[in-house]
Amino acid sequence: MPDPSITSSVALCTRNGERFLRRQLDSIHSQSRAVDEIVICDDCSDDTTAEIVLAFAAEARAPVKWFRNPTRLGVTKNFEKAVSLCSGRFIFLCDQDDVWNKDKVAVLLATLESSPAAMVFSNAQVVSESLTALGYRLWDSIWFDADEQRRMKNGDALPVLLRHAVAAGSTLAFRSEYLPLILPIPDLPHSHDIWITLLLACVGTIEPIDRDLIQYRLHDANQVGMRRYGLLDQIRMARHQIKTDTFNYLAQFNQAAYDRLTSQKNWPVEANCPPLLLEKIRHSRLRHRLPRWWISRLSLIGGEMRRGNYRKYSYGFKSVLQDLFLR
Image (tube, rainbow, N blue to C red; front, side, top):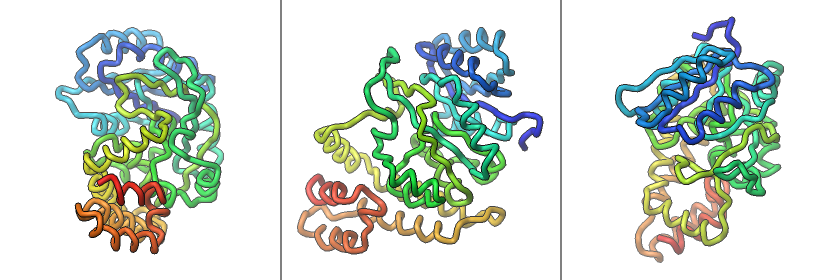
């Protein structure tokens, strides 16, 4: 349960973070509005991560709670553990390799404290390993455009999220009162922030803030990197999605969200959310099971086009071309 005397908690997960961790910790320490606690869960690092954390804890303004996993949990379950150990009314997710702008906590908390939003998230400046600006912003790289931002602000977040993920975990904060709904998080790859965002969109409102409140660092060891992709890169990604069973994963993920929402009776789930999730699951399963032979796929793809499902649940005509020609 949240401690009413603690406003904000940072849930930071580490794994061999010695290259960038201290800069991230310093950026949390120098916030214009201080956080009340920093919870750090380490997933069996074998570098100097522990020494960096302990040195920081000795001088930090906020209490630092340091936990080392006895065995590897992986990214998703490590974040699950970290958020479960937070005591604050508002929880900030934090990656070990980014840098927070000085006003990040102040801006996100101001929105959460002045509105009923269940979650807020910001834009970010994308930077290189050495923190050199790469000339674009995080939302540019994921095609989170002005229309989708407007829909989210108007309380229509789920249709946006069923097309694609838009809220990077490193940019978001949410109300801890929703933890009984969020936990446990399904043990699927890189799903913690997408899971949190999807569930909260079904029971509350999500507020996007178009300000660069972190420096989102790209480097070779990124678990997930929001790079700007050209046409050839997009084709390679489309082929990779097919080879790695991405659509089967999407069906499993959204099925888990549907099951969680429909089994919980204490949360005011928006009436349109379960049907939308079921349609997304059906669309993902159909794409996963498309026949190998091109001619056999035409009627199925045509049916999804007539229903508008490629536009509603995928990337429109790009996804049609992907299913027609890249399998």
